[in-house]
Length: 121
Image (cartoon, rainbow, N blue to C red):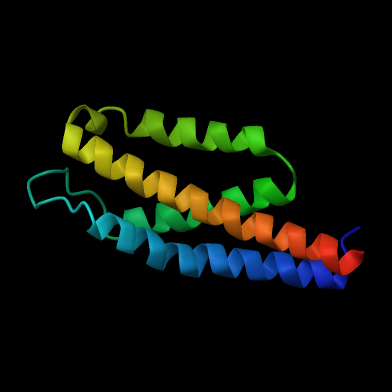
């Protein structure tokens, strides 16, 4: 059973991962932008929604201690994007965004876990 303090910390980790992660990933991707013709123009805002879901899943998996499952998430996302990844610029852009997103969520979740452990002690 999760105590109230841990629940609040975990909820905070979700908020930090989703909202803060969006800002950080957009900033990182500005360092290596795609031009208009570099990638298939998919659904409007789909990348944002995918990133939010990716960070939600990552925080959940870290809190549950299922680190190996994060690799499955990353692999599934990569399989779906495989056809588009043959274009080098898009593949690098995709990889930078995905790694920044997952790393930010991992750090937010780990911070919440560590803080919860300190507060329980």
